[in-house]
Image 1 (cartoon, rainbow, N blue to C red):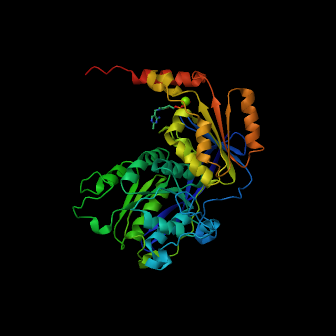
Image 2: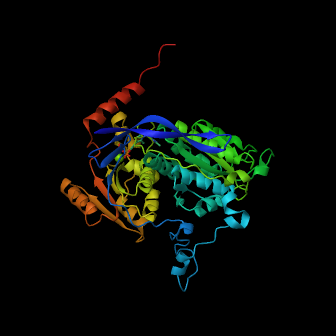
Image 3: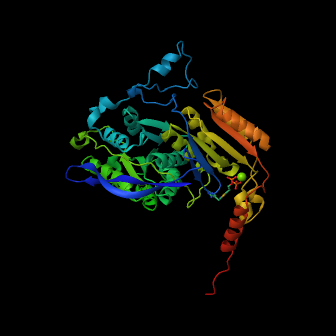
Amino acid sequence: MVSTGESSSHTSYNHETQQLQLQPKSSTLYSSALESHQLVFASLSCRVLHLHVPAMETLLVGNPTNGVAKPTCNGVGSLPMANSHAVIASPAPVTTTAVAPAGATLGRHLARRLVQIGASDVFAVPGDFNLTLLDYLIAEPGLNLVGCCNELNAGYAADGYARSRGVGACAVTFTVGGLSVLNAIAGAYSENLPVICIVGGPNSNDYGTNRILHHTIGLPDFSQELRCFQAITCHQAVVNNLDDAHEQIDTAIATALRESKPVYISVSCNLAGLSHPTFSREPVPLFISPRYEFQMQYGSIGWSVGATLGYAQAAKDKRVIACIGDGSFQVTAQDVSTMLRCGQRSVIFLINNGGYTIEVEIHDGPYNVIKNWDYTGLVDAIHNSDGNCWTKKVRTEEELKEAIATATGAKKDCLCFIEVIVHKDDTSKELLEWGSRVSAANSRPPNPQ
Ligand SMILES: Cc1ncc(C[n+]2csc(CCOP(=O)(O)OP(=O)(O)O)c2C)c(N)n1
Ligand SMILES: [Mg+2]
């Protein structure tokens, strides 16, 4: 069943008022529904669907400034505390006000814009170039920073989030982080998803000098990362000057929303805490319609783990159901950790068929067999008795039915991970036909010159 709807708006930057403006626009949204309350995602080897469920009451990662407790210590690697709960109750002070009035800083401006457009969770990996900026994102009421295990997953999570909310955001550090998130941003481009990719960049004084920076490949060229993003984003803003920072940020965000494509915003690490009169302008309220799509065009394995994380974070009133191949899962498995940290209760079916069955159907070889993991054991280890998690291995249809009953019954408040063990050739007729077509297309001989 396919339903369509009209989105009501898009945005543009008004240079006179220096504000984002809402403009009428008609576009069509597509969502595939199993029933009126079920939606389906699919990719080459991964399928994700979600169900409406009652709103979740528990949110473990929150914003200290808006009253949601956020642990600042996990009890590992710290000195024994006489009163350990006090560590959780007392978040580390954020240094925002020490630098500039909270309402007028660049970091605060960017944070407010994200909240304003509906990106109220930002998926991030810290690094020295973005740490100060992250302080401002954390300090913003209504903005939640979700720490991911790696940048690729942060990008995929922003992609999944954008599918639900209409916009997503991730924040990484210069070059080592930026180049790691590229594949996810390229996927978002292919899927027409407005993902705001924020990079903490070099100190503004270092531009134009021949300085060689750490986290780069050792050449005095700051544009490598920018040039990579030029190929896979619709707009790039390098913010290394306070005077045009407001305009650069708003133009980038407005362009992402208008073109429904990812954008790149790099912010010099020494600017986040500085103020400028333009930053105090009130944000304009915006509304963005949700959208639902597939990652068919780009088909990057590993996408579904991050996208499940991001989608579930965006749509707390729904329960995400993801079917993930064993090969795909091995790419991005770490971020089950973040799902647990965020108190998510998605249902993940891990299809363990011993390797890359899609590839087998195109062209078989020993490279399509992968190392078998104890997938439930891995998730149990990630869980580590911290959070709500239930895992189960199933080998028969009966066992699968029973596991589904448990996941939707007794364990409905847990992240449920069901490893389904199937034969490597247990696949659909459609996949076999598709495999032969790809194989035939790839092996066409060169045309005569
Ligand atoms: C990042 C990336 N690398 C490689 C590929 C090529 N590729 C397409 S499908 C696939 C295997 C998928 O295996 P799995 O997730 O186990 O799915 P199965 O077909 O076995 O159900 C690979 C390696 C890809 N799509 N994306
Ligand atoms: Mg497989």
